Image 1 (cartoon, rainbow, N blue to C red):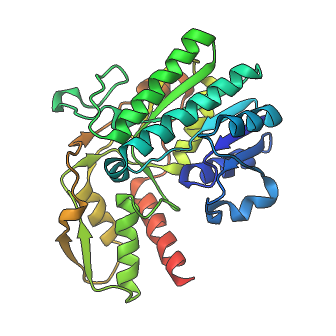
Image 2 (cartoon, rainbow, N blue to C red):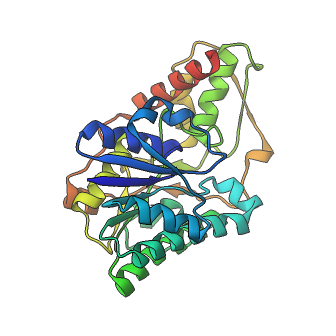
Image 3 (cartoon, rainbow, N blue to C red):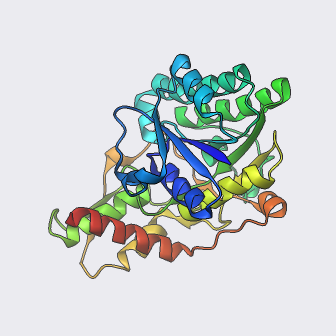
Length: 319
């Protein structure tokens, strides 16, 4: 079986590649851009087929799909950092929507009989009222950022191409996921890196934060990529599934968990630059539909995820 991962050099993409290779029954290919960093997949390079491809360019995508002819496509590539979408809304919308259109059109053009998982996001739910939690797939979508709007577009595009052309698209709305290799721009990884820097004397013992009151549903990325596999193995094309732990932690609780693994005295200071124009107060997911369909449930405890993330940054900074 042949699997193609877009965004294979990224956080989730690299973990998905590891998981698929560990199965022993999947031939893994991945697309990357010329400026992509290869750090996350360097240890896998001799087991992968990597193809340079600019997903916003239809000709480049056509060549990728025509030559690869995958049985499974995991479409993870995206501009996925919410604050960046405020600064570059048009680039975020262009990148996330046009890339997906090009993939779908190439699959149609070359009549590829494959299943496609598209990585949608809990950010699509946006403004969620307390009585609406935990959030089910049927909850209204009230996006609060350009990134969230781009993901709503990807989501509905997946549904439209399934209904209009019969493409076997499964949509997954993944809630916050983290773990080793998480980009330092994301809150869990940013805090972990700051703690590691303070421990090593690289920065003063003051940790800078944004909104600590927001509540998020965190799942370990290593559990999430197993869910992506199951979405295509057992999920119904055209359907949408939440992927979440079903537990919400305030950002401050997450921070305190990370701090509990360090012996260094650290002060906390709010940085106004880290506050968003509008923020989602709570994202708590209900993944019972996905569990009922596939049997999936997260296995890695939150505390273990945080410990592994902090260890990752300690190792990175010592290199």
